[in-house]
Image (cartoon, rainbow over all chains, first blue to last red; front, top):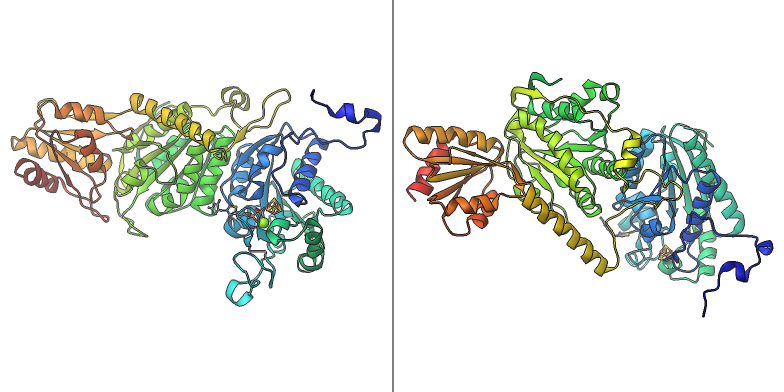
Length: 261
Length: 361
Ligand SMILES: Cc1ncc(C[n+]2csc(CCOP(=O)(O)OP(=O)(O)O)c2C)c(N)n1
Ligand code: SF4
Ligand SMILES: [Mg+2]
């Protein structure tokens, strides 16, 4: 059978939405319902809308989004686990006119890479950090993350996270907001159309800040689901996220134009 | 213009980085090599050449900054001493896997652990046999003078870009700290953006429309492709082994015995050779310049020409000696001598070892 192309199925006049050319045609490796794919797409849409694709270099982490470079159709580097902010620093320092961003999970950014995160933020590197907080190590099979909530079950906290033995969940976003080197710090979500729109606006602001040379890191946390790691259906995961993650990780801007909100 | 100066090895390395047209240096202080970043900061290379110098929060961050900048086509380096070099190994492995060019220096101190700040050559295994995880190699240059600390920066960068490989200048606390006169090479201008776009099409500098995008990664989840990538790496290491071996033979023409040494041990051994010759012992010095690739072919050839024994002299309990044994492959006697843990052997001790372990033994 001959390959059927999109315009044979959808007449151009009926087309209301199409994928940005900055996403490749590769099938996403994410579980159905996972927030990573949406976060990728809106990031790439922003870069396209701002016309920055020829000067942008992205950094993929180690985590489920390790293959972000397969999906994001721009120049990309893959960094060692947690080191993306240092890799971004290296690129931005030698190419100050380029746009540099890292895309990282919570284990990557807030556990093994805490040092790189805090110091890139504290130095005020002129980069964008997109931080996907799903409260778990998705890629390695659902182990406890630095962001795992108290009482939350994971494969390494099978009876729920117990603060006394396992420590407390880390609000790294509030932490970096305190540093003089961050310019814009916000926490968003991508599980509803309204949230996707809001998050996209936040990501756009982040890239505009860098483009306009606003001093410091623009840091966008996206509280996301991990239905596989949480062992829930995608719908239940989103409900659980609203009921449990959002109270602890409240959505909204934390720092705007260098000032705490 | 080339310039004659009296400098510490670490300072010569730093000055050479500016002159070699390096785009960036990322480092973290540690004795006995902190002079590298101190010198660079004092020299304001951002004014001299536009070179970036940044004190990172750790050696891990520094090597990952190198990874990023190297992946974006820039000429970058870092340096440290033993404990810091251990921290860099993850990054070096990634750099080797992603085939990026970079230069770094290890001004070795005694170990293991925090060890001592005194000189040592105990990081030979780490430098030549991998260091980080995975099946990779790096080019290792061993300077034996302040002059070579400077010259090998230039050579190291050339090799790094020629083969897209990490190049290590394996120095030690003696070479890093001692002062000697050095003739500094003429400054080489940093590449312009346009030159980088043209020379390094693999570098992530932003995808221009109508061109292929660039990806810097060491990952391939398809094991067959990963094996293929490993074959490619091995072919590169083989080519390097065939083409880039460097060594110096001193008083070897009529020698019956050979001392094999590198770095500051080679300087000490050179004095030991003079003492031995004064006693009528026909001994020569095989000074290694590249530790990887190791000059196995030449060494083996020499032992076929009547050399009665090789004494491997190094400031370790016996690491380089293993490569000497592999090269000699049983066709001549091989022994090891070295003080370690931060102690530097004397020429007299080397001579005594030669007499006892090789000539008398
Ligand atoms: C140095 C190192 N340690 C551990 C791992 C194994 N590892 C891979 S991904 C990962 C956790 C990733 O979790 P997160 O950053 O939250 O990303 P997610 O998969 O949840 O998106 C770990 C521990 C590794 N690849 N490298
Ligand atoms: S494991 Fe979790 S984070 Fe990873 S793709 Fe699946 S849902 Fe997403
Ligand atoms: Mg996670």
